[in-house]
Amino acid sequence: METPESHSPVLAALRRFLLVILVLSLLATGTELLLVGHTEDAWQWAPLVLIGLGLATALWLAAAPSPAALRAWQSLMGLLILSGLTGFCLHGAAKMEFTRESNPAAGEWSILWASLKTQSPPTLAPAVLIQTALLGLAYAFRHPALRRTARNKSAVTGEE
Image (tube, rainbow, N blue to C red; front, side):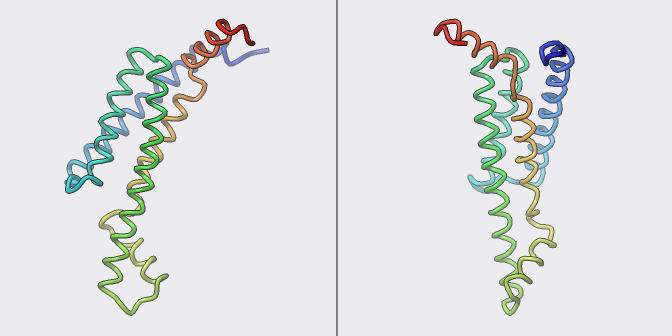
């Protein structure tokens, strides 16, 4: 019977490819945010800082995929998810406020629908951070470096 360990060269190659995709996604998202001037306040800087930390952590993982690097990566992916959700709420609230001011007689559903159809700020754009973070968590899922740590702990404690 074949085990996941017997496919480790294939899995390792897929994991490296996924890390390349993640780096490209972080670079593209960060570049776009800088090009559109997403730097007016702390809320707008938050995803840029997280993207920068993500790129640094990706380099750390590529150079030496240690348990510490993987835990830092997983924590950062959680923060990217929170950043994406926060961005979605902030973009949506800003658009609804603008739509409400431009058409005060409209009902809430009309305002919501109209705000989703307008382009600036893009309500769903922060979801790319969530998508990237989920891919990042997939990268770390059952990573061999984490299994080595679990085996080392069981050898020290005598547990199986």
